[in-house]
Amino acid sequence: MAALWATASYWILCLFLGIFLFLGVYNEEYGHVSLRKKPKYNFPDFNRIYHTRILEEQDISLDANERIIVVGDVHGMNNSLHKLLHSLSYQPHNDILIFAGDLLAKSTPQGSFSLLDFVTANQYLEDASISSNKANRTKKERIFAVRGNHDHLVVQWRTWRDWFSKIELHNNSSDSAYKKYKHAQDAPVANGLDFLHLLEAEWEHEKRHRESDAEEWVEVTRKRAEGTWKEKWWERIPEPGKGKRKQEWRMFGDHYWLAKEMTAEHARYITSLPLILHIPSMHFFVVHAGLLPYNTRLPPSDPRQPLTHLPPSKDKSIPDSNLDSDVPSDSDDESEDVQAENVRYMRMMPTFVVIPGVGALPVWYPDSPSTSASGEIRIEKDGRDEEILRRLQESAILHDIPQNRKWWNVLNIRTIRKSGKISRDGDRGKPWNRFWNDQMRRCKGFNLSASSFPSSSSPSIRLQEDSSGTYPDSDSDSDSYSLRCRPSTVVYGHAASRGLDLKRWSKGLDTGCLYGRRLTSLVLSHTDPGAGSTQAGDTDETEEDAERRKKKGWGERTKFGEDDSGIWARIHSIRCQAPDLEQKPQA
Image (cartoon, rainbow, N blue to C red):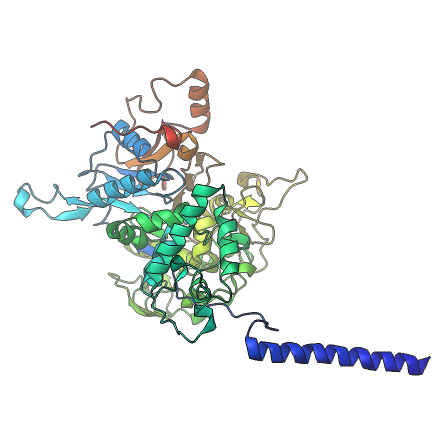
């Protein structure tokens, strides 16, 4: 019996060796069978990330401008935007307009293009406050925006299309792959733009003759191209994203056609938008999805967290570890090389900051905080040094917290799971703004005693779910220690399912205009922008709508900044129509 098993084992082993030898020879001869996974094409970076733009006091100030108007997600609802601006008596030469991302997509192409026409035409206007002489007036930027996740998908396709269109592949007439075409329209093309025209024509033909799903058709067409002259072109077309990036690279979708049809001026504008606007003089950020006040993979009291310590002064250097992700971050993002991205951000330090893979970024600052002989920072009573520290600390939130440096996070974040992982799923985990507000309410200034500081032995301030499966309110948290910092505010969009979401240190403005609900703005001024007016609602709103508006804070004042900031803030919104019902604006 033993001899029989030995003989059987021998012949089984010979059979497997023969199969592997055959496949190796076949692959060498014909190139159709591969024992190893085909390597992916090494694409250039199509993200074009501009991380943070800092708006100085001379760029944006309530002293020089009547109002600052921050608008939630528009999604190409151009007519609704103009309805909102009209109801606000918007004055392009006096007011500053800021968009919280997602200017484009999901409505109609014409709406998106009309909105871009309006923004690019009014971005720079003559500054009437500088001189009464019209000939001496200079143009000043009046409209600002951040990039939204849907804007980013358009940027990706447009950047890829510009790159792909210029590619030239010279056909080798001796290559059998270039001899396998039956019709004239199947003849090989020499450049990427011609291939795109061919592919788009094939898709249009497919749509005319049968109901087809674009994603399925693209997948089948890509597979059919294997072994033909088209395969080399398809290798240069990104495959659809998976997992958390499943929205990316959906060919022939809304974002693809917007990228194709938009003008060069539109493309330049949307590509230039930063992920974050930082307004240090008013101590607030504008971002599409959200920001974190600390690295959620570490205890909030960890000394590496930016709000647990004073920022370094001019003669204190920041270790490279604060620039790189040497502390735990999101596991899904660890494969991304942050420095390899085309990140163009300014880290507000009073010196040159060297970013590996980017270079030295010159950052000017008027002065550094006063220091003692031992190097400790002294806070002057006139507030000048405190403003410098606030600016440095706000910058540290953006660039020392690894999650805030990753573009996917600030474009998509909705919740934080128990593990500290960032999620775009609004139904799982804790909303990120709960983390933000919980941390900001602990900021008690820079002149705290050492006994007030959090230490490595301090209890974690991350809120845990209670027995009902929900998170308790921040005010009910038992942790009582303070942080040596001053609070700042985040204004954002992205969370239409949450609706108007007003917290003390965060303002969520996406109220679902795209879905026929409302388009909402946050109006900032040195005087109450809504005093003595009925701007809060439409004249034809129902009692139910009015009640809902009051409960959600429609048209009501909301606290903005610290109590002595002198900033009045009021919410103002209008009702939207569904995209296919929007009428052309009247002349």
